[in-house]
Length: 107
Image (tube, rainbow, N blue to C red; front, side, top):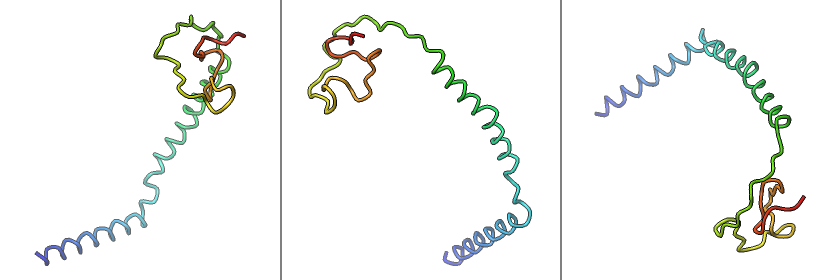
């Protein structure tokens, strides 16, 4: 049993040495084609896509009136005041979209 374990560990060590020497000799550019492909995909697809999304976010926004306010009992519960401002508005409050417990803010 011990002899087979020694033989197995010696074989795996020799295989690791052979793989390391093969990489050092001629397989240095193994991932060069894949790297070039993903670089081109990033430049030609990802960057223009992000730019189009930014243009859409800033230019294509139409301001609509907020939906009619309905005071449901299970929404906008305030058990404790927020520690900033007047205590009713959340940290990322948006007056156009987020309603307070008693309705939307007047503009």
